[in-house]
Length: 130
Image (tube, one colour):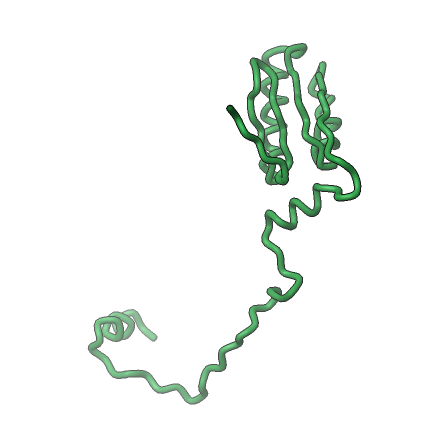
């Protein structure tokens, strides 16, 4: 259908188009069934082990090469407290950027709890302040 015909149809200036075949509606959306879960539910199930109690891990990285250790604990569903006081300002900034990306990618949260101390919480952990 051309642009002029579309505008005329939109404005109600043309007749209704007839089609040779009727359109069949599909009631069930593909991929959406009994086992369908939202992204946050899948993430909570993936990063939260139901057989073990939750743990909080306190880490004090000395250099940026310690980042995989933080990532490993966080992906295992553990809440991580990261103290970057022992790092240079440039490396500490880089480590916080890494941690923020890790938390965002795993649908978790990162919160500053003191100067150069950060809390990384998985998606299923609720943080309250008061």
